[in-house]
Length: 204
Ligand SMILES: N[C@@H](CCC(=O)N[C@@H](CS)C(=O)NCC(=O)O)C(=O)O
Image 1 (spheres, rainbow, N blue to C red):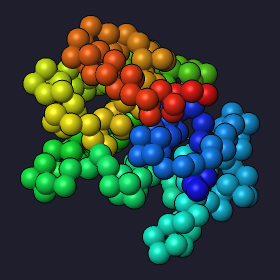
Image 2 (tube, helix red, strand yellow):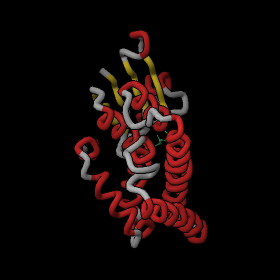
Image 3 (cartoon, rainbow, N blue to C red):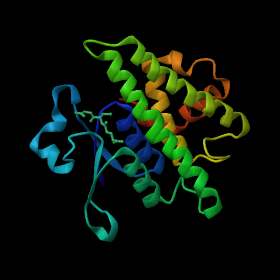
Image 4 (cartoon, helix red, strand yellow):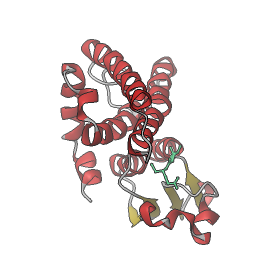
């Protein structure tokens, strides 16, 4: 059994989608980040950065417990543990890593910056717009990519799709204009959103 500590953010959703899609049994422990539950001494003992998500796998490699933060590390850990969503063919892996990093280290952090700037007490409209434009540019490239292939890194679902969907889902909910009018992204998102594992993850 794995304990997941998360909230309904894109990073939290990335970890939850990973566990659901990889078919790993877990218990969701909801952390209210608005109340600061991620800064308690117990939580900081799991992740000194005081951020969700965190998993505790009570039966990690060699039967020993593993505590892990960083949503993409959790995603890769789940993929490795289950043997799913990472192609076995070494020739197919570079494209997956590239797509995964774009989803996890371009899209999601820029969304975080956009949302933070938008909600700031003294919000600066040109800064908010700059982050929105950057996100839009990434999604235009995703749209062109998804015109040529079914999924983010080729024609099968990989960790890159799971990561990108977590970011997309959050952006679509908070700032839908950023992903509007991109038909290939919309087709991909519909297919991803219909997956039973993702449906279970999205249930609060
Ligand atoms: N790079 C980290 C980022 C984690 C992160 O930013 N978590 C946010 C929620 S999405 C958080 O816990 N924020 C509360 C805080 O920083 O106090 C990851 O991918 O897991």
